[in-house]
Image (tube, rainbow, N blue to C red):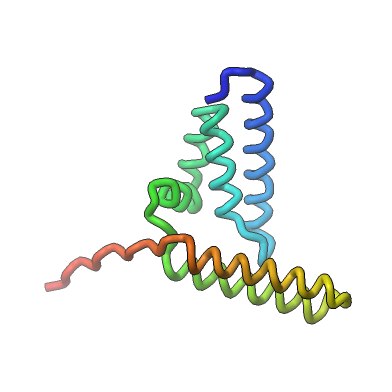
Length: 134
């Protein structure tokens, strides 16, 4: 945790901005949300234990943040959904919204980097074993 009150305040503001963007990402298709809550938890870990606990206890996203922090990774289904959203967002952007070939190339490149990161660097969480039915 930061000792300087100004630095701690900056971490709190950064965490709150990440929470706000993450909350918007829950509603807006194509905008990720979990990654912003992960960044918020990291910022709050440097500034406010109470706010860090709040993020870790949020319904729906808190468990994902805790799993990511403990190195468990991302469930395969979530990876497929995230990858699909990236492909759809890049496709719509480059096919319908962007006319400049330079910007199309940049958006496609960023999308490829995002896909490579999700499928190449983020570990895949192992599914929990199913209970036996007798």
